[in-house]
Length: 223
Picture (spheres, rainbow, N blue to C red):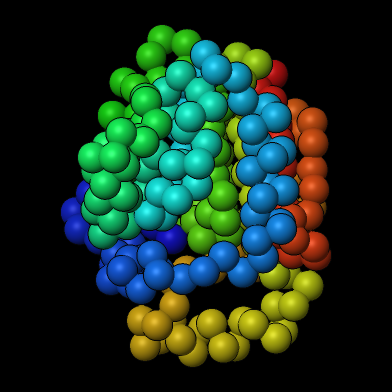
């Protein structure tokens, strides 16, 4: 996925924007693994933390995590996704149940507004769930994430790793992409994800599979 929105939407951005309403109605495939992910993320967040989430979709995870931190900026490059997230947040505000400090923004990882939001020190934590395998040029994005993270801060991610099954999925994905029925997808392995993260300057302090065997969870610290 080309992360830049400048000059119009990339094919992948347009894909996610178009299916946003359908995506919002989809159910979590593995509820136990999702809850385990939330548990591990929450363990690493503190009440005074400033958090940035990339590739947040329609904001469901942000709404669950934001109450644990001081501020939570939840972003997605597809405006249609953020439109739905804003609707969810507005509904919670009416009921008085909206997490304080949560805001949504249609932006990619290179948006200048993120640097301003990070402040002089950077974010305490940057999150990216089910996202890195959808990014075209993840090296540049991870360098940007490193730049936006404060010294000692965390990058927490979960990445779908399909490389061991590429022979099964790749022909189908390529065919669907020709008809704009699928976005960009990188066939990563857990080892590839780890290398991308450490090459950007982070130190991996925790990994997991939620769910096994293809959803690779990583907690990494900026050193």
